[in-house]
Amino acid sequence: MKQNEVLRVGVVGVGAIGRTHIERINNKLQGAKVVACADVNEEFGKSVAEKYGCKFYSDGEEMIASDDIDAVIITTIDPFHEQYVMAAIKAGKYVFCEKPLAPEAEACKRIVDAEIAGGKQLVQVGFMRRYDPGYRQLKEAIQTRKYGEPLLLHCAHRNPVVDESYTTPMAVENSMIHEIDVLRWLLDEDYATAEVVFAKNTRRTHANLMDPQIMILTTKSGVRIDVEAFVNTGHCYDIKCEVCCEDAILNLPEPANIEVCAKAQRGHAIHSDWSTRFVEAYNVEVQEWINATKEGRVDGPTAWDGYVGQVTAAAASKARDTQTVVDITIDEKPEFYK
Image (cartoon, rainbow, N blue to C red; front, side):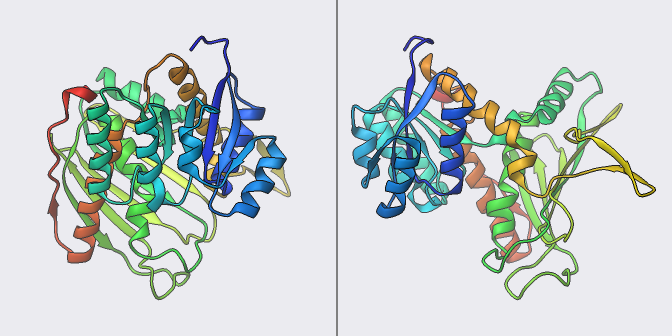
C-alpha cells in the first residue's frame, strides 16, 4: 500500500478503548480511517457505527474477512482476543490487539504458531508504554551503557481507586503486565524468576483484594526488579521507574504540567488515570502501527512478546498463590521473530 493511500481499519469491540481508538484514528492521526466496526451488543454497536459513519457488523469474523477493510484493531474483552486475532491471521490482514494478546500463555502460543505457519508477521500487541517519550529516553540511556550496566530497578504502578470487581490476581495480570513488558523491553532480556509478596493491607481495599503487592523479578543476567502495585492510594495515578546503574541513577521523567502558584502553595497537577497519563503514547503507538502496516511490516510488540508476557505473568501469579519463588521457563525465540 502506498503511503498516500488511506488504510481502511475495522474495529472489533466498541467499548471505551475501542471508541477512543476510533476517535484517535478518524480525528487526530493520519493515513487511516475506521470504516467498519463490530460488537456483540448489536444495538450499542449500531449506535457507535452511526456516530462515526462506519459500517456495522454483528459478526466480528465476518468483518475481518470482508473486502471492506485492510487492517484490524481488536479491543474486545480479553477472552475473545484469540478468536479475532486468529481470524485476522487467516485473512492475511495486519492486526493490532490490545493487551493481553490472550489471557493464557497457551492461547498466545497458538497465535504464535499460526502466524509462523502463515509465513508473515501480522500481529502487534498494544503495550503502549514502549511509546511513552520518558520510557524511550530511559531505553536510549540504558542501551548506550553510558552509565554502566543496569543493576536494580525500582518501579511503582499506583491508582487512586479501583472498584470491587478488581481482585488480587488483577494486580499482576491487568496492571503489572505493563511493567512485565516494558521492563523486558528496556533491558532487552528475558526474566529468570518471579516472586510476589504482600504488604500490610490499606484500609481502602476490600475482602477480595490484597493491596498493595510487590512483584519481584530477576532477569537472566541477574538484574533485580521490584514493582509495587498499589491500586487504592486514594490520591493519584502514578507510574515510577528508577534504574540503578553502575555509575548513575536514571528516573522515568514526569509528564510536563504547568506549575501553579496559588493560595500560598506552589505545585503542579498529576494525572488521575492512565487515559491522560499515556495519551501521547497511545497516539504515537497507533500512528506508528498505521505507518508500518501501510509499509507491510510489524514494527512494535509482536505476538512473541505477547506470549512471553503471559508466560511471565503466569509465573508471577503462581508465585503469588504459592508464596514461593517461581522459575520462568520460556522457549527459545523463533528465528521468525528475530
